[in-house]
Length: 154
Image 1 (spheres, helix red, strand yellow):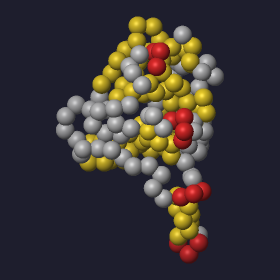
Image 2 (cartoon, rainbow, N blue to C red):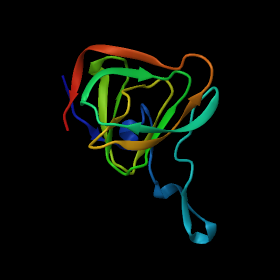
Image 3 (cartoon, one colour):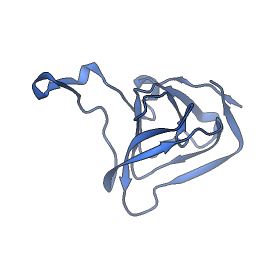
């Protein structure tokens, strides 16, 4: 099976979470006009502490052989290197429900709690991401592996 990425937009990604990008409708001038704050772009969902981490994603084959989800909290990814990247999500943990999104280097996203997704997919070279997620007790990772992988075609 082949999977082709679609552009990452608020509307297309809404069933899976939120897009994080500088939205002019949420712009507020602060610091005597020297800073623009793009306010409340997304909210985290968690039943424990919310933490910030940096994930360094490295290129991998563009084959989707599994999905995972985090039932106890959302997970946000914001690229720090400004390079385009990919996100794969699914309504159910099977290859036929997978959707791929082509994310610009100035777009992040937040996977809602319980949303099936593939781990980080970078394009070209390694890239760091600021990640906001949950740190708390109890299992918060479920994985499902496919019998045959999907091939992502750009």
